[in-house]
Length: 244
Image (cartoon, rainbow, N blue to C red):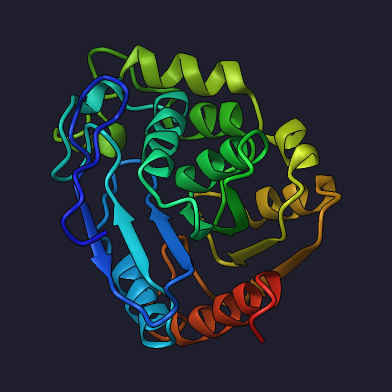
């Protein structure tokens, strides 16, 4: 996966970083949240930690984000589920794939895993479940097409984004359809995506599942949480893939 080129179905190049690991039959894909990219500190730390334990990891930036082609104004959950499927298209059939998604990237993972069994195990970090509520809570006073996300001029709030998250509403029906083993990790001090989002997704899921609550952790966690997350994911993937 080191030199592979990844393009989405619009032909846009998706920036990515590969971390080699000793398990040749597995690949862990990591996806970021809104306004994020593959180089967020928590994604780097988790990928490095898992690779050190043998899990090859691939950090990706969705189109319009980070070093990937495309416009940020076109970014939304639906578009990113298509990007993730394009990534899955280039993964060798022999690899057991796990997906780790953070925040909105976790919603992308749930919606994709519910219909694409190429994902063999799922991990949600501070996962967004109630997408319409998120838009209403965070951006009700911002005019799409004119204003910005959290007053950051690098991230325009678009109608594409707002309409998509409103249309999805929530990911609960997809959560009910997930059949893969699913680990959900959420901090109880998350002030962006409330821990109740994670609890609601966990309650809806009927697959093999585990909910891990981290006391005092915020939305993006921090360096004190990373070792615990790596340990939990390592154990979960090993059990899910029968490698313990």
